[in-house]
Image (cartoon, rainbow, N blue to C red; front, side, top):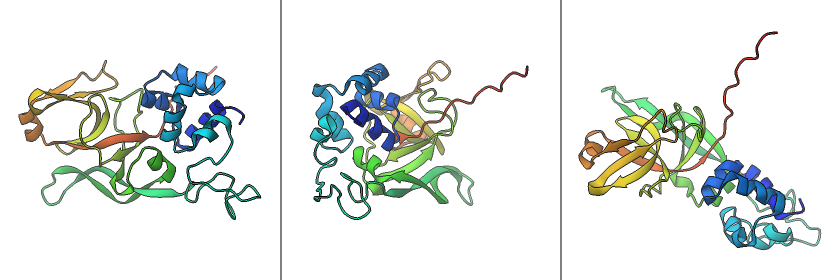
Length: 241
């Protein structure tokens, strides 16, 4: 691990972020990130990358000094029994987040998005720290369908920050639509309307709702998508010889 690019690659792996997802977050192309892996992070980007991934700029740039803000080292180069150099207490801690899904309410049988009983998703604390998400606001949902392919595949888990429901145009949100769980890019429209956009726009055209339709159809923003797992496309069966 001799360059800032090497350290970036390992940090993304620790945060379960793909190069493509990180590139989208930083508003650069995946090729830019691949170049950073090979040649190092540009100096102009060093501080913002360090802040996003909760590491010290000096460590990210040169590998010297504590890895995380507030780290201390003893003369043996460790931070205490059982911890590696530069590792903070809780770095490897996993948190349990509630899983939300579509449920049928009783006795009406009306569908709604609610917490699934006895189901939890484990996520590393450092992911929440890196994305500045408060634990009490964090929930998980699962992607259903192909409307967000190829960005988010069917079945992928997603982290939702319920503390960020104010819509920023073009950001990705989880929402409840008449009891259905949906994931879309959202755009505000004049008069309180909404535009819903899928990543797979070829198969799923934009949906436009007036303020009245938003109310009538019970469209409610659950929160901002801050993380998602990555699944491979299903492979086609190999042809028999």
